[in-house]
Image (cartoon, rainbow, N blue to C red; front, side):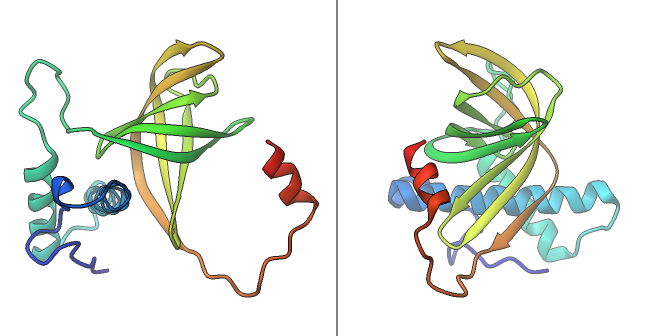
Length: 177
């Protein structure tokens, strides 16, 4: 299972050199690669030398020194739409911060500390699925702002359109929401 290099020099995108949408896409792809490789280690599958080098490159870019914040990983400010799914939860959220350790969502439903959910991020022709556990919750008016920590191995589904989509009743209900 080899990953494609995101840039010719580094496996990690340089966020200051590219546009905001590309930053979000490459950040998610980099985090997906990192979480997949860490998941392989946790499962005891082992890594080859190229995968070990990939983890080293990603960590050199994304791991903090654990200064005043106490965080292990850097978080990148993003503005993405995602879906949080769980027990009786299937809500659209706005993702404001993203890092290899987890993410921060606004306009979120109540997610208790320790509750396991799935975060779905649909970008271009890929649907990324991350399992996460609730870490903290802040009241944000009508909704909540939540912090989720990634757990387990993520999944990436490649989306292929087989035929042209026809607008139907479900689309009109979804557009109204």
